Amino acid sequence: MNGFQISMLLLTFSIAMFIFSIIVCVVSTVTKERRQVVTRIEKMKPESLDIGKRIKDKREARRLKIESKAKSGQSLRRKKLMDTIFNELVLADILMGPEEFSILWIVLTFVPGAIVALLGFNPIASIGLGIMGSLGPIIVISMKKNKRRKAFEAQLSDALMVICNCLRSGLSFQQSIETIANDMPAPIGVEFSRVVSEMNYGATMEEALNNMVKRIKSPDLMIAISAVSVQRQTGGNLSKILDTISETIRDRLKIKSEISALTAQGRTSGMLIGALPVMILFMLMVISPDYVETFFATKAGNIMLAVAAVMEIIGFFAIRKVVTIEY
Image (cartoon, rainbow, N blue to C red; front, side, top):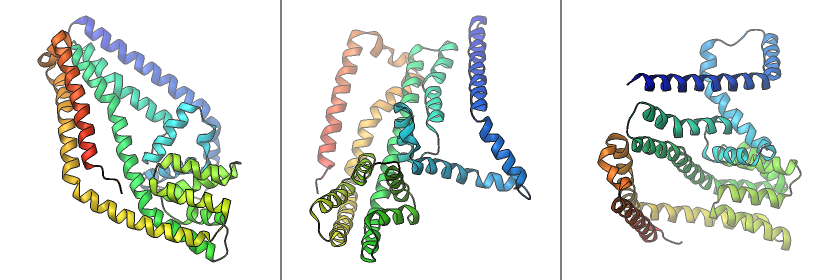
């Protein structure tokens, strides 16, 4: 590295530390009153917890904090962007606030590429690191959301049975929802808690349940909520209806698991064949940018990249059509 590169690296580090100091000062000012309350409460305790206990309970406290935000409906009062990020993090069961995730996302997108550019490497390596850093959090959230939705669907049949038992014992439908929110574990307990919170904030039951359907995007949940909405308009034995739907959902889960086992090889092959060229391209952009520079610097290379992207998209949809079975 020459002197100019060293100076630019030091300047970038200084600017980053300055921004970090400003963020710390702002957060400290905003949370000053809350920290004072916590300090007074700690002084009122007969004896404080030891350090080992604090470290052991740190993750659980953070989980309770995120879930309490979801249950209290605080996201309804946030700005639209932060509200969207907050809902995505809750649905993915990621124990981070929207501000923390946004900062991490920005850092992963720009900082590695900026450092590589300041060190004098090929700009293609910086572009590759920026793309990988920007796509990484999105892929993680998508995978964790799918995992949480599957866990929700696995609990849905039991939740409907709980509602049926509560209705048969004389409780109302709203009291049945509160029972699920209080007694069943996450993720279904957290989602029904949000339904209860929205109703407490003034939303109707239909609006709160439809909002849950929009968040989860589960066909099984949509069937159950549609049946509840129709029953509230036309009347009928709701417990018997939900009992039938519970059996249907249980059978659907069984069929879904069998289909998933039969199509596992095809889905794995499709993911590998589709992701392998893209991952190799990104890795070469970082490890050996000169090797792939022709694709970006020449017209023929640009055409080849465009053709490869179109073929990748066609192959992705073709394999998805083969392994997707309607049931």
